[in-house]
Every structure is written in C-alpha cells, then in structure tokens.
Image (cartoon, rainbow, N blue to C red; front, side):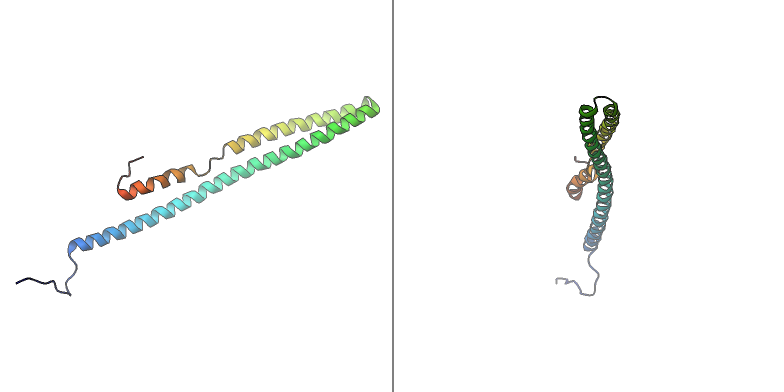
Length: 139
C-alpha cells in the first residue's frame, strides 16, 4: 500500500527551509537596495556641493575677468587722453582685478577636478550580481 500525504499535515521540513531562505534573501536584497540608494543620495549630494562651489568660483573669475577688461579699456582710454595721471590709477585697479580673477579661477578649477561622482556606490553596485550568485569575494 502506498502512503498518500494528508492535506492537514505541515509541509515537509525542506520546503519550509526553502521558504525561509527565500524570505531571508528577499529581506536582505531589500535592505541592500535601500542602503545602496541612501549611499548614492549621499554621494550625489557631496558631488553637487563641490560642483556648485567650483561653478561659483568660476563665475566669480568670469566677473573679475570682465572687470579686468573694463579697467584695461579705461586705462588705455585715459592713458591716451591724459598721458599720465589717471591712467596709472586705472592700471592699478585693473591689476588688482587680474590677481583676483587668477585666484578664483585656480580655486574653482581645483574644486571641479575633485568632483568624483558616486564612486563607492558604483563599486558596491558592481558586487551585487556576484553576491547574489554566492561569490561575494569575486572582484
């Protein structure tokens, strides 16, 4: 006689373990995705802050460069018109603006070069497929 399973019996132990395993995997995957999302947000915020700071410095350099051209133009104009007096004072002001423009441009360029995007998120996201296959250490 064959023994048929009864409907009121609990599932075999191996099926219960598989269900728990899938529940664990689902929960862990959900946690991993949530953590990766938070990491990406933090890295994007940091990169945007640096990019904004660099862009502001370059904007300041552009304004300072505009004043250099303005005061150099005034210098040439007054120099030709009055030969000495007022031209030298305009030249001094233009030189000061040239120094300011150079400093702001240098700082802005350095800030822009330091923007790295989201490197940690990219690296850990590449590891997810291997982790799902059970090869966490593969890189």
